[in-house]
Image (cartoon, rainbow, N blue to C red; front, side, top):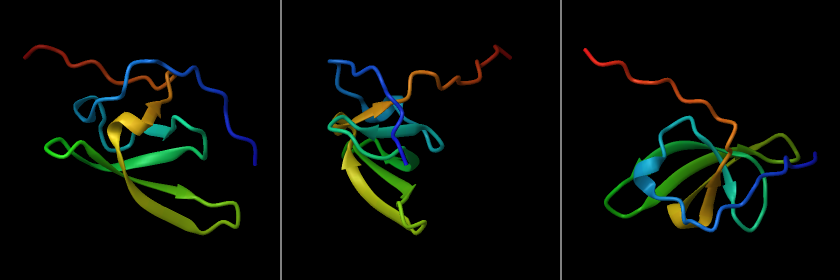
Length: 80
């Protein structure tokens, strides 16, 4: 399985910019992962991804080691 190309930003990813469901990968490369949970206090991000053999893997990473897929559109909040 080939990994999608992403434009890497020099700006570290901040935990407060991530939400469950966001698609990320390690800045050093690797599979596309889904953010499951974010700890804003510690800056840690819990992610899950599917391995090449089809099994699921999960791990926690520091937000600064991740990059977000730029094509990800987020719904805009509308004022009440």
